[in-house]
Image (cartoon, rainbow, N blue to C red; front, side, top):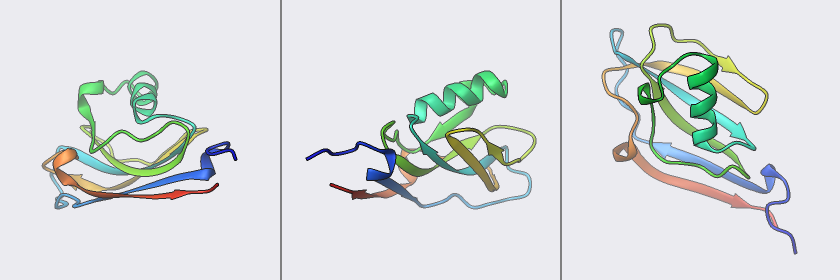
Length: 114
């Protein structure tokens, strides 16, 4: 029996207590959907390709590279915009005065296909 032969065989969905959205917040809160990349891989791509310092990108928890995952992250950026890359996409949800962090994590939901 093979487990995790495709990213869709291991699905992880993160649930957060999202911070309150405000118009003047320094952080943009994003929903991140990814496959075939770890959370740190995505942070590295965002940092290099979009010139966002990695210290300005935060998340609640790291998610597996060999999975299809949905999680949240925040970035200290001026412009809120959607980002679509080959193995991930970011959907801007709103601005907040506080970044996403582990303290906001409620739970992770897992679906494993055998």
